[in-house]
Length: 257
Image (cartoon, rainbow, N blue to C red; front, side, top):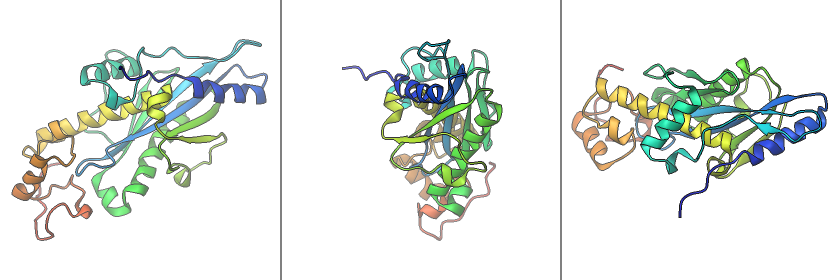
């Protein structure tokens, strides 16, 4: 049985609540957030943020901006369909700079988006939980800076709010933490696709600079071949060395980043 397509139902519920509280408003947005790379051995953790714009004609129910058909959690899409969805979300012919920086703006004028990252050294310094906060806030703040309509809500995939503790400016709207939101909420599914494709491309770029670990294929996750390569080659600076991946006496190689 095919997996269900994510819908904007929850986003429209938030938009309706905003319009009820602001009867003169005609537009708002709901931002979806999702992470990728939390459990990898190498590379950054990335968080995608996608702002779904919602419009309302006088007295009518809210309607969302047009979205690519068949939006799903990125893990449920084939690489080909994931790339096609990514291209539709960021705009045909547009790309992202590689390797990824801390903030990568993307998306369109009407539905801005961004991918925020925290690199391996930040994960080692702060721990994965705070690194998620850093990445999420980088993505969220980048979208908030360019959003030209009021923010009606934020939907975060998961079971823990790792976002609000690190915000430079408090949210003036509700933040909903929703388990499996990437499978049910269109804005979160879009965010998951942006984060997944951007991070995968980043790992492929790192693989070209530091061959031997198989990052283009394993994306930094702990495959058997990847772990064997760590033992054989030692740790690279892109590895999360605080995770005790190999014995402490293994030397960190001075390879290009």
